[in-house]
Structures are given as structure tokens and as C-alpha cells.
Length: 443
Ligand SMILES: Nc1nc2c(c(=O)[nH]1)N[C@H]1C(S)=C(S)[C@@H](COP(=O)(O)O)O[C@H]1N2
Ligand SMILES: [Mo]
Image 1 (cartoon, rainbow, N blue to C red):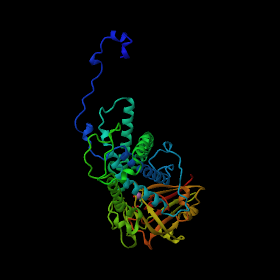
Image 2 (cartoon, rainbow, N blue to C red; image 1 turned 180 degrees about the vertical axis):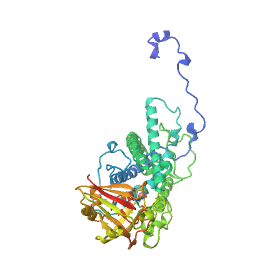
Image 3 (cartoon, rainbow, N blue to C red; image 1 turned 180 degrees about the horizontal axis):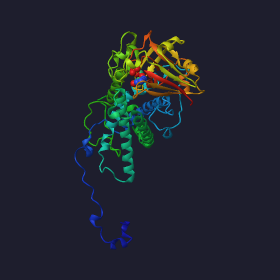
Image 4 (cartoon, rainbow, N blue to C red; image 1 turned 60 degrees about the vertical axis):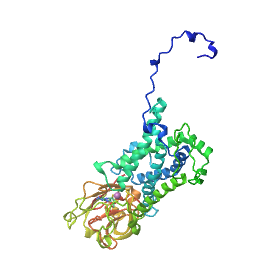
């Protein structure tokens, strides 16, 4: 209506019919009412602070995740279930001059920090839960886009945790393709996380300007006050009395993370620390004597029998010539002993003293084409590590072995007897057990 009724034409318009506008659907009860959410801790500051803590954490998890992906050499056929044409170029590869436990450090960090971040992510989701019940659910197109992007953000982070935790537990139900789900899921999550951080940056800045970055942490329970309700809908309109301070909440989250660290880090570090790894999926007795260290996949589960690995066993080594070598012939070649770490993508690692023939010596014996990759094939026909491509840098490392013995004794059947590949700084799964064939293929 024009001020003062200057435009008399408005009066001549027919009165608006009430049905012309859809009446808003009534707000459902319960969590859809703002009064339902009463925690006096929720508010833009708390959410901003939890979100800020996630920035460096997620960054480290993402970087170590990519390092793992590149350590697989996903561009070599068979190594990853990723289509290389839907991938970004490799940015970083471990130099072979680094210690053999380099991958154990980055992957241990990826898995341990990833698990430790779960309490923080849950706290962050808790802090924004009233938004899930916003009413009306979608107001307009911009609102719809926002909702879909949040669905992708939250959905993908849950997928990453779910698949990650299943992998740590060495459990792959329904034959799920862990590698591609976790990898493409990371792209979705990473993209949405960066977008979300950019979109929310002004909110975070305002929250820190209004309340200070750390000031709310100085308040004990008695001084804990709710943040004033505002358009974000995070702070309660009807706050209950606090039962914990904000720093108490953060201490709880931190304590949960440290507990996860205490029961997980041991299996990433390996050795005696493994005893503390209550989250380790496997038992603690693996073999006898010097072969007593953990086994991921046993010979029985791989359907490897004594008969397949008996005196008739040969490893076929293919270069420009081909040789079929018995275990005796391998033992008659120059033997090398190296202390090398197997570090599984699932987050555990073990360091042992391996003895066998250097892969470069085998390459020399059959005349490997220059710059060749090495394809290692197992007697086991299916499963992890059974058909692996090692990059030239990886197999031509002085320390890389076709191991026949470990810690001074013959390999046990579970550890890959008659021979297994051991290469420093590769994902554990690339240390093929029960080797049947080594092919030096032109790159
Ligand atoms: N043939 C074969 N090689 C294999 C595996 C396997 O299941 N079969 N497991 C791989 C994985 S996932 C790891 S981490 C290392 C060490 O596993 P292990 O403890 O079973 O020896 O061996 C790798 N080599
Ligand atoms: Mo593994």
C-alpha cells in the first residue's frame, strides 16, 4: 500500500483473495519447535570454535589420505579401483631415500587422527542439530541448494567414517569397494568442507568478534551463559540451566579423542605398543618363534595349502628372458637382510628383519626392460595383494626383497612361504605373499 494513499488506483484493485497465497503448513511439534532445543551451550560461537578445530585436523587427514593414494601408484593398472582419467595428477611420492616406515607414519597419522576426529565431528553435528529441524524445511531455491549441500557435507563425512572404521576393522561387508567409496567420498566431503568453511567464514568472524576467540573457555560452570538467540537458530530461545561449561564440553571431546588415541595408536606404531591397541581387529598370537607377528590374511583364508608351496613350487621371473626358480635356487643367490616395515592401509604396522634376494638382482638375472614396472602375482587368485604393480622407483630400491626368511627363520606359511615381496614405503597390501610370478613389464 502506498504511503498516504497517493496512488488511488490501489483502492480500485479487487481485494486479495486469501486463497491466493498458500497458508504456511503448521509447524510440527517437538524438535521442529525452537523451544525444544534448550542446551545453553549451543550457539554460533561454539559451532564456530568446533568448526575451527576441524580445519587443521581435516587438512592433515586429507593430505595423508592423498599421500596414501599416491603411494599405491593408482595410475598403474590393478593397483586401485579408481579410473585414472577421473583422478588428479600425483603430487607427492615418497623418496626412496626415506626410511621404510615413512608410509607407516603418514598412514598411521591418517587412521589414528581420523578416528580421533570422530568425537569432534559428533560434537560439531550436535551443536547444529536444531538446524536439521528447521521449519519450513525449504523456503526457496537458495534454501534448497543450501540443504542439499549440507546433506552432501554431512552424508559424505559419515560415509568416510563408516568406510574408514570398517576398513580399520578389516571388515568389508557385501564386497564393498572400500578404495573407491572412501576416495570419491573424500572428494565430495573435501569439496563441501571447503565450500562450507568459505560460506560460514563471516559467521565465524562475527562470533569471534562478539564473544572473543577463547574468552568463552575462561568461564567455569557458574559463569556459563547462553549465547543470545539470533537468526542462526543455534542459540536456544528457551535455555536450560547449564550442567557443563563450554570448556567442560571441549575437555570431554578431547578426552574422547585421547581415549581413541590410547586404544588405536599402538597398532600403528607396532611392536610392544600393539598390546594397548584395544581397537585392533585381530588377536595377538600370530605364529610361532620369530614368525610371531600379526597376520592380516592367513594362508587358510587365502586357500593356500602346503601342497601348492611344496618342493614343486617355482617362481617365474619374467624380463627379456624368463626363469623359473625354486626356493633352493633363490637361496643359492646372494642373500640380503633388511629391516623393513609393513604398514597396512588399515592402520597397523610391523617392522621385522627380512632376508631374501634383492629385487634388483632378480631384475638383472632376467634383463628387465629399462624403467620397467614390476608386476607381482600370487598363488592366491583373488584378494588383496595378489596382483600388484610396483613402480620402478619402488622395486629398484636397494632394500626391496623377495623375502624367503624372516628374523632368521623360514617364512611361515601365513607370512607368505615360500617367498613374499617386501618393499619399503609402500602400502602393506603391495607386499605380495605366496609369490608365483614376478614380471618386469615395460612401463
Ligand atoms: N597374496 C596375498 N598377499 C598379501 C595379502 C593377501 O591377502 N594375499 N595381504 C596384504 C596385506 S593387506 C598386507 S597389509 C600385507 C601384510 O599382511 P599379512 O599380515 O597378512 O602378511 O600383506 C599383503 N600381501
Ligand atoms: Mo593390508
